[in-house]
Amino acid sequence: MFTEVVAPFTRELEMQFALRWDHYSEVGNTTNPKIGLRWQPAQSLLLRASAGTGFRAPSLSDLKRPTIFGTTAGILTDPQCVKQEGSIDTCTDQWNVERRSNPNLKPEKSRQFTLGVVFEPVKRTSLSIDYWNIEKKDVISTLREQVIIENPEAYNGKYIHRDEDGFISNILLMKENQGKLKTSGFDIGGDWRTERGPWGRFGVNLSGTLILHYDRQFGPDEPYRSNLGVFLNDQVIQKWRHRVNFEWDNGPLALTLANQYSTGYTDQNTTYDPYTDKLLAPNHVKYYSLWDLTGSWTVNKQLKVRAGVLNLFNADPPFSNQAWFFLAGYDPSYTDPRGRSAFVSANYSFR
Image: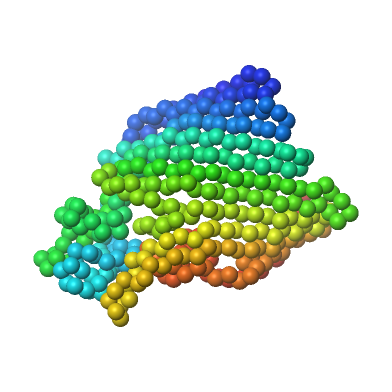
């Protein structure tokens, strides 16, 4: 059940009050409120804020999925084995894992807060900045492979099973409520357009996100570890990402030159050199920047033709040592190795 009240106290001040109640047969009831504020003291200035709580019930897969047997996603080195055998090569492998669901999971809960401002100094120009802060607790996850293997003193016998010679025979990965996540940052936007003239209309718009912190507990007994600007376990959180569009349109014709950008970061750096039997020197992944050029031609009310070149300058993904994904040498979660490509499409409406 959901209810919402929008209350315009004055022409300048408006508030929102919302309440949501959910019932899940496996985990029970939850009630989550939200309050919002919108204040426009001048035509060119808008202030906005909101605060609320959130809830995510475990999925059927989290609760009841059959056990899956396989291997670790990445190639990882066992530090206890290295001390015992004196060799990184002997102690690096994709180890056997057992992935289990958990019928006793609790739901994730969150609280979030936002505060922002929109400023329109002149006509057809606007700037916005919004601060956001999110905290989640009882995050549903497995204690990640890298965290488990790096701490054998804590997890031997519980998550790490070894054979009589001390080598890892199995790693248990079970869905659990794994501590907290704290993150905050700014969403930044801008939009500028000219009046339409003999050469058409020009415009620029920007949307970007600056992350201030991203701290995770990978287990209830684990300390907070930062994922910001660092590849950790299965992902990296870039400090800054943006997309900017440079636009032109003149009646039926339109062109857009777009840039997508993300900052560099410290790599996973678990890879080793099998010839020297030593870890490779720490790698820093460079920034990733792609330019796309697209255009359209509205022939008439029924027919529209689009064409474009993606990755205009044929940029390669930055090199990465990550050992989580099967595709090695780069991070496939946010980069594309296919290089420059082009497309043409036509849309015809019979209405």
